[in-house]
Amino acid sequence: MDAEAGGLRGACGSLQRVKVSWSRGSIAVYVNSCTYPPSDDTILLLEAMEALRREGRVYGSALDLGTGNGALALGAVEVLGVRRVAAVDAYPCPALAARATLPPQALVAVCPYASCLKGGFDIALVNPPYLPEKPPPPGGQGCSPTLSEAWAGEGVMRGMLEAAGRLAGEVLTVYSSLSSVTPQEVLGAMGFSTRILASERFFMERLEVVHAWRS
Image 1 (cartoon, rainbow, N blue to C red):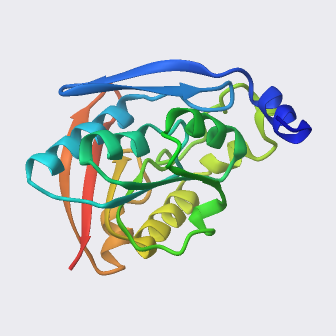
Image 2: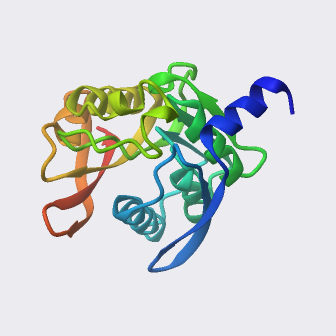
């Protein structure tokens, strides 16, 4: 381990193993003090992947855009059976967690809006910052001077969805009834057809998973 990598691991905190379960399976992912743990939106997206699998859809490659802990990328491997997966985040600490979560052959990269990739993916998986207000960053402000800026709301969500639409033939994403922008709006403007594949109501909001494909 070189000094730079060691310093980054120290800044991000130790890795903790977390189990994520849904109706038909479970996976283990890793988080650190600067990475959000899997939540209800992650589970709903994994359920939606199961729905795609049951429909007989076949994917050879997947992009997890804004990967965080890497749960969706691992879900693409375990549920959708993809052979090529890339997990990209704008920040190094989540990328470290995703690297620990994913198999060695998975690509893990740090670049905003997957700007370091050329595309050609069968499906993009996106769990964007869909709330109009910023939640507190995990681990406090010391994790990254700009981590809370990633939760600025509409602009970041729109940018992530537009990147997904450029890089993949299909998109699977989640949004909230509290969102100020919707995947249908952004991806529809890019020529995608959309449908709601899964939804669930929680105390203050309804989460919906949108499946989009090029018309």
